[in-house]
Amino acid sequence: MAEQAKKRVERVLVMLDEDELRALDTWRFEHRMPSRSAAIRELLRMGLGEMGGEEAGPGLKSESFGVLRGPNS
Image (cartoon, rainbow, N blue to C red; front, side, top):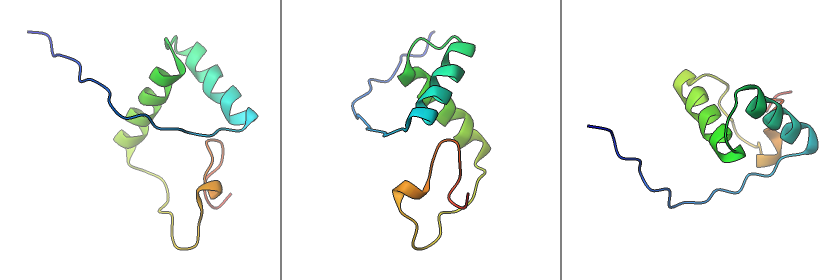
């Protein structure tokens, strides 16, 4: 039997600069994703599957993290 999709109940606002948005849209179209939301969910799934990256560490703010650069870039 097909698995039933879970209802999405939380909205998350993510602010992107022009270069980050362009990179997201480029990836989305290259992978034929139906929407930005779907592309972001797929990228999150892929990233969480890897569980790589650096830990934030003390003193870093949200603005220290970007799509095209990490916290220490």
